[in-house]
Image (cartoon, rainbow, N blue to C red; front, side, top):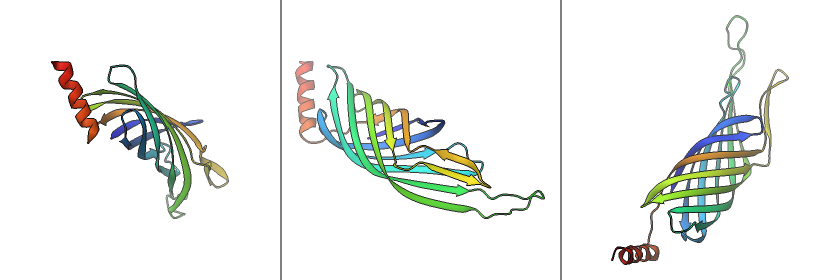
Length: 183
């Protein structure tokens, strides 16, 4: 289980990315993963946009030496829920001319996360490079002028914390290794 926060770039714009994921499977080798993220666009003057990518996938993970450092690479597929709310326009007298309009769109979404994690006991720190592609570029216009535009490709660099919950056979093996190391 991890929670990561950092910037995400879409060619010319930088946005805030908050992501969390759950990985279920082996410490070494392949595991399943579920992720959910929120991307908040900072330029909210004319259009307030929030993107929510959610997906499932597979992760290949390996331990680097005897330290608590792990590396993983994955591939996931899911959906990106795009929500945009246009701000009303005002006349020269300060009167609201147009209504607020809310748009919801759902697109296929693909991610390739590359993550490094350092664990101490059951918790640790994670650094990840997350590339995503949601098949459709978006733009909004007001009076014939583009006021918001984003590419379908994004890349984010996130830092955060994670918690390792070890169940079943892996817990017994880890406990046995600790006892042998202490005696």
